[in-house]
Length: 330
Image (cartoon, helix red, strand yellow):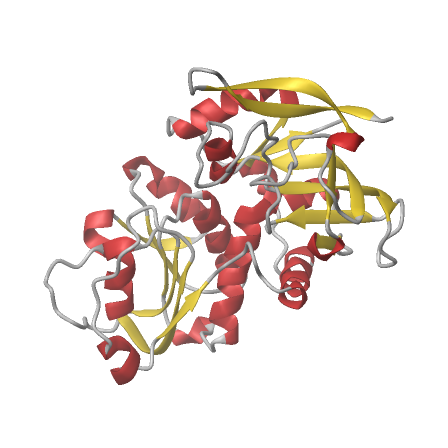
């Protein structure tokens, strides 16, 4: 019987939650066709919520968070995978209600498993993780929708965040002109070093006029925050532009008319990385391994062992976390 280390989140008798690294058995893992030895995971905000007992993310405890995992297949009852295959597992229910990547082994359905594309290492795949995959899905929606570098400036909201900063880096690599919105006034130099030509404050990016449409300014927009910033971006998007939506930190509601859609032909594309169909999932990972692969990710990525994850979770919840954190499980 193989035992391994994992972070276990438990609900205490008084309703509080505690976290500890404990020994688990592979026999404790949920049903699934593929057992993966996890070499790397990464820390996401959803993991921090799960690790503190957020029922909107994880329904029952004890639980092992970790919505991202990359490693090697050790056992498979599905012919598509064999022992020794290097794979990526993100999204679906991993780390939410299925034991996740903060354990040295996971067992998951074969339909969740993506073969590691050539050109990408296991560690590099977790430098991107769900945040990078979501960013790449957003860029893919712009490209597929016909927004080219010649179309004009592309707006990225939450540009200094995990999804936003990687979206900026990919767009810069593809020669788009980028405007970035950030709520952090000290991030201007960082954003410009990433390729942002125009840095906007939240106030500058939020329309308060109440007009149903604004002067066309953006060829497209990658929105990571929702709320009034998203509705303002839609109203200022040029004819046939594409706006993507993947977050709601600024609010889930949109104050809009249909005019941007029926008078300018603007497309609003929802980005759902959790349930992305496998053909598109594989396509986007392949892009990240080849023509969209980013050099210098190490500048915004820090590596930690599993024992240090608890402190990083506290930092993330307190707003002190910056960049990407890769967890080395070995």
